[in-house]
Length: 274
Image 1 (spheres, rainbow, N blue to C red):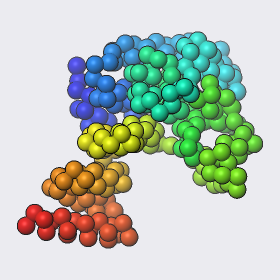
Image 2 (cartoon, one colour; image 1 turned 30 degrees about the horizontal axis):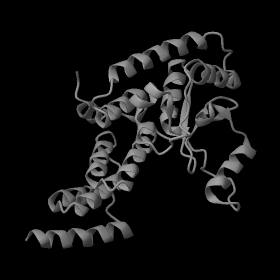
Image 3 (tube, helix red, strand yellow; image 1 turned 180 degrees about the horizontal axis):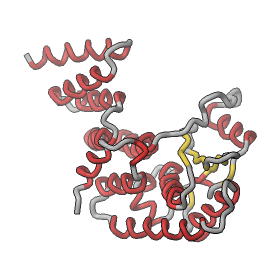
Image 4 (tube, rainbow, N blue to C red; image 1 turned 180 degrees about the vertical axis):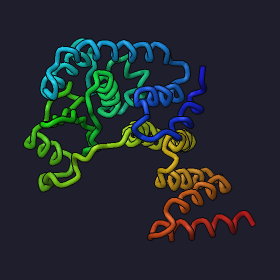
């Protein structure tokens, strides 16, 4: 049985396109819930992939609407996955093992399930980092944007505009870049960010730092996370660890206003060690 953190370290060395997003999310869930039945969750993911392959056989090539319907049939209708509306802020909704067991989750956690099934079927798909709400896109000549939290509901321009206004206010309008594809790492980072923020909200700085460190295992070049890790270590008065994180950040981002501020912080912390 491979240690989940060792597995995440290996993911951190992979090109983004080679990351098995469901497997990586499963390893993160094992760390978050070490006593949960992760092997049952893995068996479910394997079964879901086999079902997706079987269903994909009768879908006409590049029929994106039918693909969306097949995925909704498989994930929402057959297996009962749905958005966690009643207890949205429950940390279990961002843990893939618990999401599989309960069939309820946050948009990005459900998105991992949908991406897993789509790719098993051989269909190109990617996440969308929409403001306040993760979405999924099925790629093709006529792409489809789906709200997986709502069972895979297709979203046209009007629906996307309404969703944006609900998050950013009545003056918000659709703009370039809102539907840009997310990388695999970006999806996983958004998933784990939910856990980190909930830990911070509960005053668990040590837990938030641990979550951040695990995120850096599979995204070692995420400069902002190194700075966050430095700030969290600093809050815990772990000066040497904070310095290591800040120095890594500065290697990745050597210039700019944030870099200048970070260098000042580094000098102050070093003076405390002298």
